[in-house]
Image (cartoon, rainbow, N blue to C red):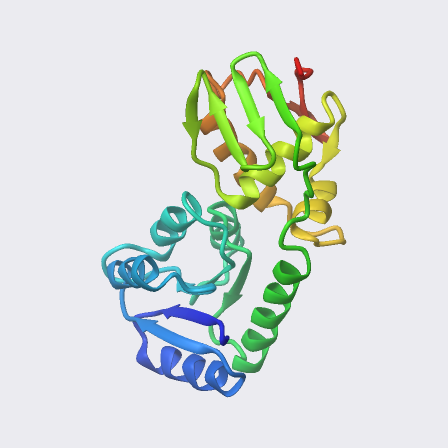
Length: 235
């Protein structure tokens, strides 16, 4: 089955070129011309990949990216006419997988799409939990078989990557993982790359499972190194 890619940009020459090159590679391409339409199309069609312009009418690309990332871990590439370092970092901080500055080569865009999709398909479940293992940490329960997380008997909705990060850390209490180690184990990116996406996922996890995210009880930062899960299982 062909994979579906949503391209959102208010410049029709950009969307036309992206559509032509991506369809040539066998992808089904959806096009949105502003942020509101992009969000509606993502909700309606559940594409496998999203390419977002940073600045669009209505919702910005950053706002759309943030909304998608709060619910799903599909790959996202951000496009922008500005090449400033702060813009690149802002897009990556919001959870984008990659970043391209206009004008860009459509062939390079296709190559980046293929590489990101290949990584996600090679390692769709970087963490392979035991089907019978349930981890219990006081009020927090992590059910591996159901990929379900509860805090104080209330279900916590996590994306696939958020669950994988949490489960990996929780399976190795007090073991410190660097951001690059987490990139390699969860995202299958085996190089010294940009670790901002790890930081974003840790922040979102803390917002969801920590009673006080500013003073985390479960996921601790080990300054200069990475993160560790601070409590041992009761089971």
